[in-house]
Length: 87
Image 1 (cartoon, rainbow, N blue to C red):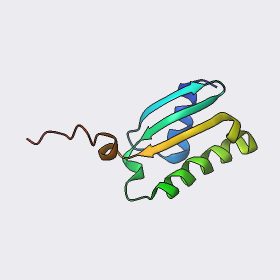
Image 2: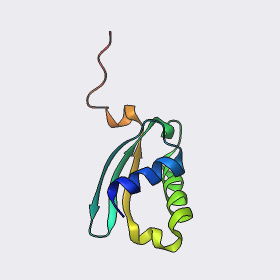
Image 3: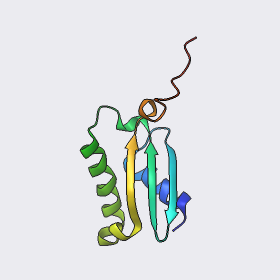
Image 4: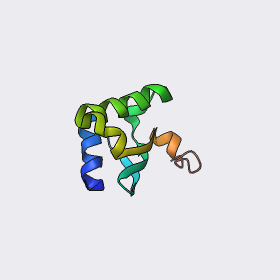
């Protein structure tokens, strides 16, 4: 599977709003960060469950072989060091 196909799968399965990805393929696994305001007001554990539920729904037991560490952030969390300038 290509990285773009993996990202599109996450967009579709998670219903991600305006996502950004910092994902790379390491060996046979995808790892990295998923940035979307879809994750606002959700705890880290809920975010992880969303991701893994989507992957397991698509790939079943093979999900663990396809994905490594995937972390979820909102845009504000990701851009914390570079806040948007006012006005």
